[in-house]
Length: 123
Image (spheres, rainbow, N blue to C red):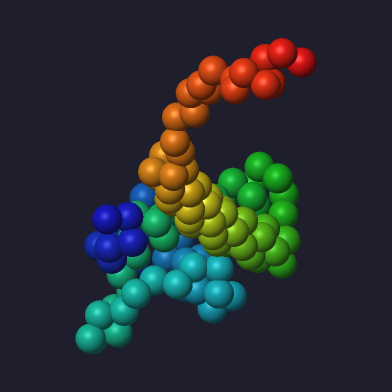
């Protein structure tokens, strides 16, 4: 489960090569949202760690500031949400089409023309 909280802030910071204070700043900016224990300890999931790595790439490789990173993350979250919605709609469409096809198979009757009546053959 990639969203299961498992890493304390020091471990998450080591995994991504950042200072723990940087992770706190990113949390304050809303860029990452670690879960909290009952004692208020931050716990980061594998998904959070991947998000931190993405933030790191955006800032170091692309030179984005945190406002730019925030915009990219919002757009990526929206894209992910829309993809899930599209997948659900495609599944619903496939189910509806399957239902229509099942009905067609029941309603179809094989047509076998018989010989034409004598008065039609003469024409």
